[in-house]
Image (cartoon, rainbow, N blue to C red; front, side, top):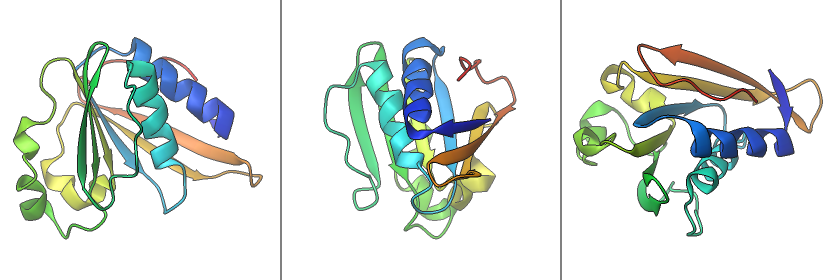
Length: 145
């Protein structure tokens, strides 16, 4: 699918509002692709009222939401699964949580089997993005864009 930024935000809000939980989203794409834009929109749809900075320097943010919690993780600065485990990886994905992971490639071997891999790439025009959403395992469904 191809979306502009407004479409990406609207889809993210629907995911946060309507998708069943627990929900694990692995966001893939280059720097500046729109991963954090989508993450903030999902959190907004879930009812997070706090400002969501990029987690690049803090690695993990945990937000209370209307229906559970949203965990936003950025693995960009990590080298591999061993460092990821130190973040409390096994605790993520509790009942009612939405877990959003940017740069999931750093944890490929330990990603949950039930997840969505969402790749964001530049689109055919500067303001458009190509989105590929791949369901893995028994992940809950996502609303259409």
